[in-house]
Structures are given as C-alpha cells and as structure tokens.
Image (cartoon, rainbow, N blue to C red; front, side):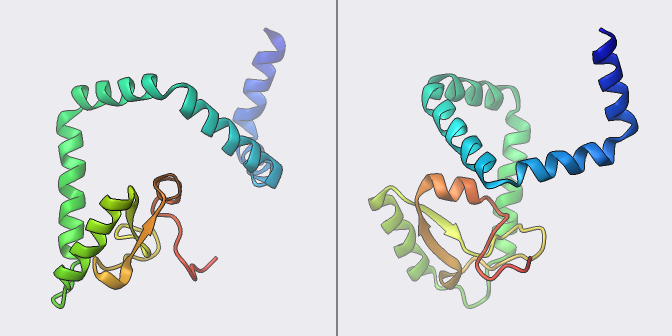
Length: 144
C-alpha cells in the first residue's frame, strides 16, 4: 500500500516528466509493432463482444450518434466545391462497394491541421483496416 501511494503521489507531482517518458517509450518501433499485433489479435478474438458493445453504445447514445452523423454530413456538404463531379464520385463509391474497400478522403475533411475537399481528386480506395487506422491524422506530404 505504501509503495502504491508513493507512486501515485510521484506521478501527480511529476506529471510532465512521466508523460515524456511514456511518450518516448510508446514511440519505439518494437512497441508499436507489438501493440499493433496485440490489438489485431484482440479485435479478432473479441469480435462478437465488440459488436455487442458497439450496439449497446448506439442504443444508449442514439442522440449523440445522430448528432455526430449530422455534423459529418454538414462538414461534407460544406467541403463540397461548386464544381463537384458527382458522376466521378459515384463511380468511386460503386467500385469500393464492388471490391469491399473503403472510400477515403486523402486529405481529411475534418483534420486538425488542414481540411480537404469532398471531390474526386481527394478520394482513394483503401483497405478497411488501413483506413480505420489512418483516421483523420495523416495525409501524403503532411508537414511534420
């Protein structure tokens, strides 16, 4: 009990130093690979549980879910240029459905640093796992 209390107090008093050590640890390549493999195995082994949890979250948070979807639609609408090529975009979405792929915005519509357009030139087909891992945190030629 004494050791746990000491560790808790130390982390509280040295929050920034502890965070820096943890960040350095997590940035090591072997850790990233280990964590990625662990997460992949967990998702496979617990697919039913995760689906059930996701469904329960939806049922308990319908209003929030619909608010998130409405915001996404509004952002997409605002990111659609006047010269929108609807026929080309429809082809990309149809091809994605045929191949079981995701349609990804190369430059994210809601990125922290920059926001892209919803247009044919900003779309690509990605494997679902890669697209979900990418999120809106990465795009080609992203400044570091």
